[in-house]
Amino acid sequence: QVQLVESGGGLVQAGGSLRLSCAASGSIFGINAMGWYRQAPGKQRELVAHIFSLGRTVYSDSVKGRFTLSRDNAKNTVYLQMNSLKPEDTAVYYCNAAVTLRLGARASDYWGQGTQVTVSS
Image (cartoon, rainbow, N blue to C red; front, side):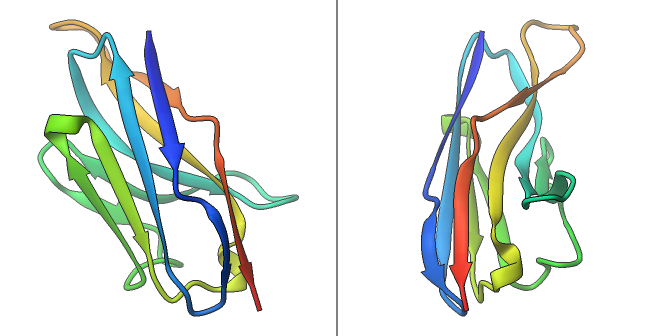
């Protein structure tokens, strides 16, 4: 019913930048929140950044000041601009969206397939 398509991952040297995109499509009535999580090998999935329907954005402490999350509501798309990348940012990045399928329905969580970000030292 809802698909999240991610793009923009890759390999970059420390100090470099990457931009991730995530576009939501399908039978969407509304998106309450949308953003990114990441999971490094041997570690739990963790929040990177999330933006809510009224524009409030939250970031993990580890990325504050380096990453910027923005949203294009007309396109149901979020963008994660990642600057000053560090080797510890290496992980699979997953897009997440809390989506309502019809008026009055509760939001359900959807996930993208993940995109690899590798930062070399």
